Length: 265
Image 1: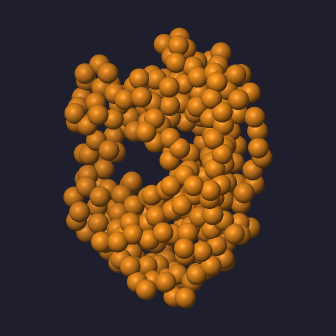
Image 2: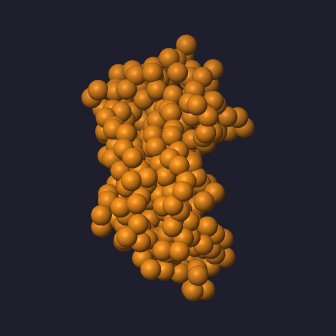
């Protein structure tokens, strides 16, 4: 069986374990059903997520020109403290920025390899945690806009990491911690503007991933260097496919690449 389509991050469903779906041209694949099956992945061409043209992907699924033009790739995406829609100030497209920034946001703690602080729209809970490969997470504050979430994250990351060790996450080199205790410790560092939005009572969310075998020595699949690969799928965690030979493939890192996916057995 063979499929073809432009790569975008896998869609997820918060079940036990997580269900993963890969959307292809006119179809979708429930990736969990591919566990223990041999797959062939082959690069076909580029397809920029903005203009749709066969132009080399620069970052985040966009060609060079579109990366510096579309609001979906603006700096406030990665640095929410730079959000300005609440002031009525435009960065690249005020209507888009208002639609994204002026809605409830969550500042959270997640544990995938270590405890980290992060920001996401409320509508992206728990999707954001699943995409990061976090096995547990908890909300700290729920604020009305992205700017307040950004300055809260900025203050808290002085006291807790804002990075995930993706190698430890994929090797399942993890330890369970009491995120409620971490939240209480960090409460004192929340900026004055966001203190009223502190969430004191909710419980941890736990996530289980469909992995039958974790890798020991990681090898990353790079479609630029290895345009064709064949291997047996043994797990899915975060946005990574994990193969029997310890190769890992971060689907989200290759957004905008059109691939042919063949199920060999």
